[in-house]
Image (cartoon, rainbow, N blue to C red):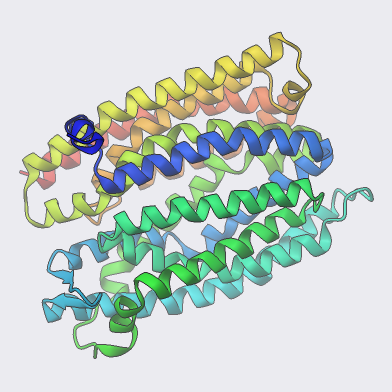
Length: 449
């Protein structure tokens, strides 16, 4: 008996199939490389450069405003059409012609949408970011050209987002997650080399370039026939109507994504503005660590979203609920373990008074942020469950959370720095998360009656 046969029953019991396995590998890889990246940044970058580095990243996340949550919607709609389709040995799509026509129309529409989004990202982020950084000039940091070059590459990367979403919705998560794993390795090696070569803020530009090259190679090698069918080889007769079908969900997802920016990225620009690049850098490095809590938990959830959609289409609600509760148990355990481990590491660094500790937030605000991320992580199975019905009943709660945290950041963050932000963040999530599960229970009973 080989090793695969020995561990297969345990992996099955833990709901770890090939997509989940690579999803876990991706998050585990991130868990391993994040400290290495953080150490390199803290060792080679100045404290101010570290602040600019993480503020660059947080501002680039504003690209979600241009896509208006369409990526999430694409996954749900593609999954419903894919339940009647499959791939043949040549890599071409076969199955129900109506479903194929609707999937092709969805793909062609989204490419046009993201083409416009890419232009908005290029000029909106480029000009807006220049204005933001110019308000706090620092002659010791050369940020202008690296910023504009990064905006240019980011605008091109925007065009790849719908491709990933179509593949994910069409249940190609096994190949997709395997690709992301290897892509991450190349990107992180590029990032480390760039940091070691003292390229400073150019490091983000180089990593984006390598990421884009990897994507192009992957698509041409694995899914050339797949996208030829969707773009060129199939004549669309039955269309998915954007205004009637997609927009009712998309505008809600767009608002949710906008609020998501305030939930995950708004901390750093606010601290940069009111407390300077050094504090923003401490927050950025800390957030890159605590952000792993829901991210790694999501390794079990994200690969199951297409399965959610197919089970709903087939009205196999008992299987859907069993899958949900299995994912919930895993999420609670994984997120709690990672949060406690991360906090202990930061606490020990401070007790030993190691220089690296000065590049992070103190243990108390870091611990508050980590506990808040556990609350966020346990809401992921519920939100994925609801959105798989092509509905967004959590819109009001998402907007409320985003507004409350934005206000908290601007007030408590301005006067009490990161500690004030942490307390406000925890208070908001302590109110919102119980309401998420109340909404989940209500709509589950309504839809599955």
